[in-house]
Image 1 (spheres, helix red, strand yellow):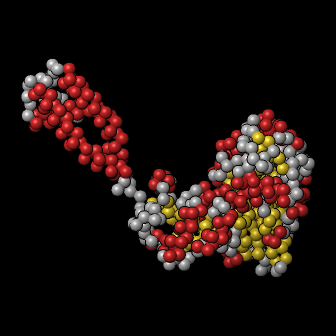
Image 2 (image 1 turned 45 degrees about the vertical axis):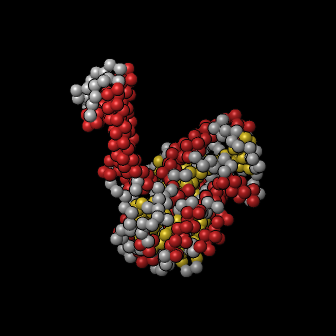
Length: 544
């Protein structure tokens, strides 16, 4: 029984007793103080009328002060019932009764991926699964969260794993389970699922790396620590790449990289159109997207003018991206990395950087071992005392997006050209960080989403950004023709960024390159661009 139902029943049960007491007191008072006796039924009617503020019948005047005090007290008690008890007890009951009920049992849907507990860590995964047309179902134990999810149009089942009315079919019908609660709750979920006979994959996200082995022993198929993966990614983006603003991950056995590069105001590219800059011929890199004014564009037409401060997303070999980095004006490699925030992620970032032989300076509000400057990272005086002007890059590792976002703006204002790498909790906040001046903003949801999508979907397309995909296709329609003749970009919006031929990976080529039959072609583009490619070049899906 819900809390609101119990409260209403308590009110209904106590009301007759209260009326009985008031009627008895009134009957005795009228007999002994007013010397005008009333029957119990008349006294009960007076108590009901007064308490409900509907009137007093024929009793509306009293002589004795005690009776006047009694009538006044019951009047105010009735007003409190009307204005306090009713809204606090009765209204919530009716709201709950008439509010849409949350489903508590497994739907008829089968072969879905069940996500136990919602958090920002699974936001990107939900998007990936929707794009892959894989049905999902959220199992949420907190009613308020479940209602918000339902209001967003997400399929959700509300319940508590350990309740007697828990529907085991919720687990047994799933093709895979993602445990995204607290570490103990995830352990319970894994254990319950295995005890019920569930044989599918169970992927658990844990906060503490030491819990990975116990979780595996309880039956999890795979266990990940997205917070630490995010820290490693932040450190990797900074280490060795701050000089040329290169940040990205390696693909195709290290032959192909993705990177984001902020165009320096003194760069030779500023003011040129993409076509006039001829970046691919000059560097071998392909520009596949651009952040400008906080907005990301998955298409960069040849007529687009390159502006100072724009962040180019490029794909190419290591050498190609280094050459592009030289064009956008690389910065000095001198100075330590300034890490703002020394929580779980901040500690791991520092550990990874120091293991790589880098020097760090840590700012945190709380004094602790490893904190170099104690103070508020929002205070310019604290930032200056920590050596912001001499820092090689600023890594914002505070857990709160609002704090990190405002710190980004402050740091960018104080030192316009310092590389800023920011930790983000919510995926949909990434654009705000770019708008505030961050060179790279990495969300927990992006990290967890890519890990989980690769594990659950066997996804052979790689996320470069929330709107871009790197996919491989068959060379149908391209074989035997120069890329310039095929006009892939004009027809579809996609860019050909790599070709594998037998055991060879080709990433540096011009528009005169001719793919051959049997080649595997790697494309970069948005979901819509890739769909247009499949329409324009039938047979390309054969390899995908």
